[in-house]
Amino acid sequence: MGSDFIIETQNLCKDFKGFSAVVDVDLRLKPGTIHALIGPNGAGKTTCFNLITKFLVPTKGRIFFKGREITRLDPAAIARLGMVRSFQISAVFLGLTALENVRVALQRQLGTSFHFWRPEKSLEVLHERAHELLEAVGLKDYAAVPASELPYGRKRALEIATTLALDPEVLLLDEPMAGMGREDIGRIVALIKRVAKDRTILMVEHNLSVVADLSDFITVLHNGAILAEGTYQEVSNNSQVVEAYMGTGHA
Image (cartoon, rainbow, N blue to C red; front, top):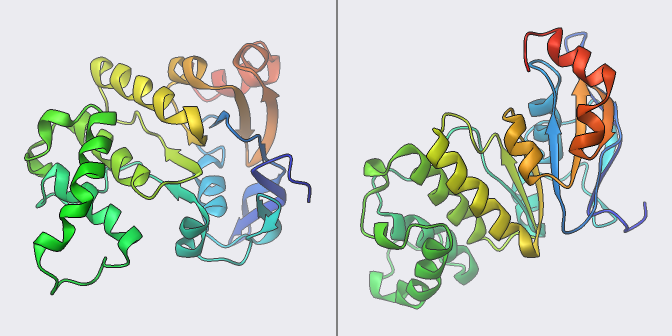
């Protein structure tokens, strides 16, 4: 495969006991863009996302990252290559402070992630970078607050900070606005715009106003297959896309 695309899939398929959840999906992400994967409920978005991030094994097809085939790699290997994902449900350590959560993620760079016997002082070298990341996601004043006490939107911002601590080249966001109020959505949209300046983002998102605001390019899935691709204006004016959404009761 060529290297014009940072992520590329070829004839990607996933079957579950005779049901085809993803059907011959050819997905191509250009470096430095925000690419949205959308579609009505049951369209195959999350399955496709899980295939790309290797949380599911494809029935057939191939996946490439920067021209290298990664179809048979596991999620940890994918993360080491520079492709890191978030999840629909906030995944942070609730018993740790915001600073400690980011510091745990940063420990990977020191190779001390599992060195629990090392004194806490040995981690002080990470404090400056941890504070920088907290400031970047708007959590500067929450460093000492336990994650369990953070409002939901702040927890999602903390999760993004922990993924950024891994210094990903590609950030994959699974419904980053799920469960958020309007104020939190505005904050996370602004955050995604900031972190996208020097990396590629692939996101699954139901909020179409967010998709319109953020996305450079959109792929619409329906019944597991690609229905349409293009800019938001192009896909929103596509009669097949409108019919797919209206037919399932979604706007």
